[in-house]
Image (cartoon, one colour):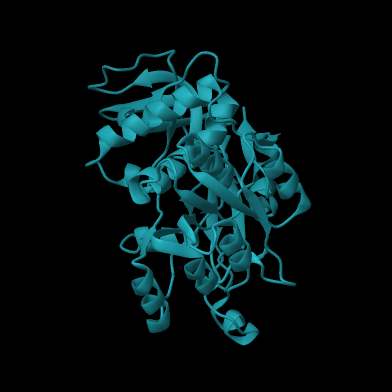
Length: 361
């Protein structure tokens, strides 16, 4: 047994109504795992930390109730052992990949096992922490912009929360593919980051509780026609404080209402949402219909939970590491943390509005 071969797990407090309230424990007595067929044993060098969505986990494991779940999926490390049937990798290879959401292993441990089809080789000049910080958000951005929205040159893209780790990649990738990009911010640090992006973003729009200028700003920027694609970072489903309290809709930072999102869409616009419990009332559907618009749900872990799209997934990973290596996409690391700091960092991830928190061994 190794002292740092630990598994970081998240346990939902059954008595809490807030899905963001999390309790973390560290199991420090796990033996080093052994790779199965087509698996790699990886010594983790860096792991990007992301928020836990309890609703998604509860749905995935509804037939197998668990008290705890491994956390930390975006990893970069070195192959130390290969399982039966592995031919593309050997011990000593540096890799980057994403652990499936239903994996038994945590990227916050020193070692983990991962399928050879869920990783690609890491370029020698790309730092482990940069690879781990960006790989998950890049896969998410590719899924949203290419597979869902089919964004291309001349389109107009609105990114909600453009300075967050995920939003930052969406902005860069949208610009790279020739789209005109608008982005929202909540804090001055976010605004400063967005205004520093080159080439410049078409418009940065403040979201706050005092006034709602999102729709008017989008209409002004687009000449009243609306945008071709919106990727949200969560939406409000209700308007009254009583309804919000009843369903536990309590965002730390302001997010747009679903009606505002729909109002920003142009003809045949595409709304890519991360809201797992999105509810569309008949008036909402009517507005979408009149625009010829569509709604898609963004859930990138679906790539690694099914084996039917391995070729496309590998293509995404290869293109991601190539763009990161060449500096075409630049990740923003909010801070590097050690194993001793992981538990506290996981509890406060929703307060990080610019960049990614990365565990570095």
